[in-house]
Length: 165
Image (tube, rainbow, N blue to C red; front, side):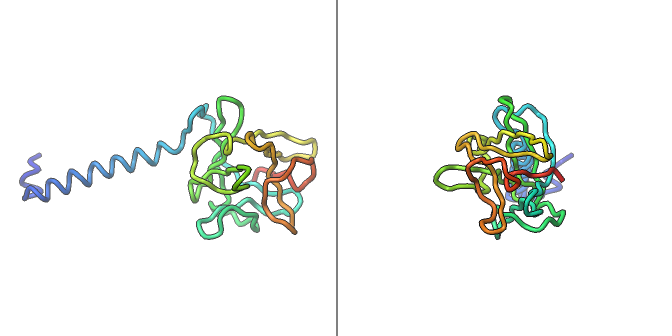
């Protein structure tokens, strides 16, 4: 195929080459975020519904990470990436941000970096569901009507138990 004929001028060919390079880099960036350092390749997708409030963990650009009425939208769907150390990283399907807990910033959605702030140990209480304990802070994801979604000292109460939906 003669690209000189199709694209005519040198500036058109340069623009086409630049566009092609950009498209390739964007495609690579889109797949690169799916696997982090130490990821085993095991991926699951779930929404998380709190045992106590019945609300789901939700992340949107406007409202950030919060507990919100379950609605089945991708703001409430998270990809779970199993790490080689047995922990999990939770990445929101809408924003691409990860669930993160640091001492200074607290529980939030943040750009995925696969550091301990974004790694979660899952335990499964006898009443069903799962409890998410942060590797860095040792705190658990907690949702109560009065306080909302937060990281709080692990206490074994229903505020900290979430069902996979």
